[in-house]
Image (tube, rainbow, N blue to C red; front, side):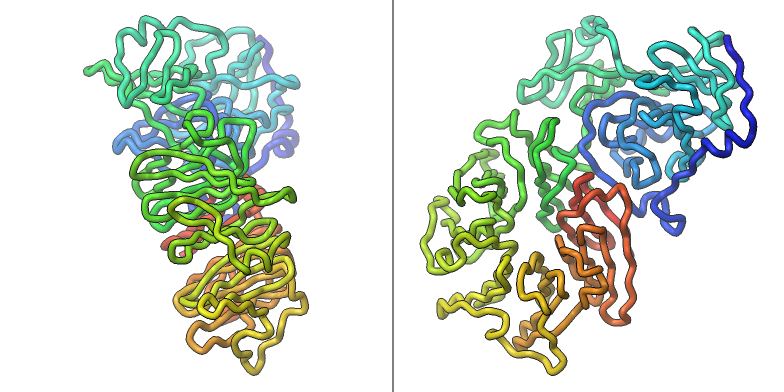
Length: 539
């Protein structure tokens, strides 16, 4: 055994404090939901199971209600969402091991203190597989050594080949093959899962490897698996019940829905698909491409919810899910060869309009056949970003300008020739690349790098809403409106602007990644980002 003492000034320099984005926020004002990947570690308090995941931070599962609550991620101050080990100590401190080192929170929520791996003396490439505790210390297990830490400060007090005291460990990643046949023979599995007594088989017939095994305070056996599902063993009924809360993608391109969401995003190296997300009922259903027949693998950039169908727009095709028949089908649209992406959908009577990188495509809602229209020829080979409509008009934002199509008279207008201009209206200096549209009951808003303009439905007048200097004249990815407040998502973050009193807030945090879509529901704003689905309680 080797003992160490470190000068105080070194400790001060190697400790980093991370809290929620800013101290003015509560720990879960910002919440990040992600694809979890495999479960690496499980630990328990009297109230929660803390589940360390490969990609989704630390999930919190309420043991009293059997419901998922807000996860602990980079939005709460963790340095990484890839969790190798987690341990909830008996003194109430939550410990987490990542590739950066070790982190701990006295509140079990935010205000994280990070201890760098170099300070711990972890060699390059060494991984923390388990965290545990003895009567006096916190312990770390790596592939070569055990590290003893002070439970208050996290200072390393020893390194050894084996602990010299009894250690209560939280579960870690199973690194070597173990025999699960006796355990799996003793328990049945609910919800359509099966077992071959070596691994678990999900309802779609895919084999799932068990990645960690834990025993709860109630002496229940918990199994974590490679797809983020965990199982709770009922000692009386001898039954394993599955629970899972994960997204199909981490790069969320589009949010569709009101009370619940359908989410689509870019393909990644892990299992990809689409997600049905209902936070109020703690439901997160994943439909993966490799487990559903007639669901071709595709990045998803747009979604529209119809009566019994959900349409997903991808690259040169659409995927349609019939919710009533629980049936998937892929349709090739043949948009073109130049980045054939479907950016947006719009329903007009029995037609579905597609805004694509090569123009507009119109499909029959029932048989999905193409419909010829002069509007299709007019925008051929032009990028169409978004579509919206009033009773008789369709608004079209493109790379060459903003256009309005009169559906009754079959006429096309540009911005300058449609409607009335208010006295102080100033036409944006850049007439092109209107990339985002949103509307409420009275107005429709259009954004480009030169400003945001607004159209009044009642008197058909145009006026200026937001100067481009408010959002740094950046490309606008998406906008959302709540009465006098407008939220503007750009490549540099989110601007919350009050159009009545001209006040603004700017949110630009590293855990955002890039923002692709924005939606308001109740007191929260939801962001589809390259780092997952993020919510912010702004009221």
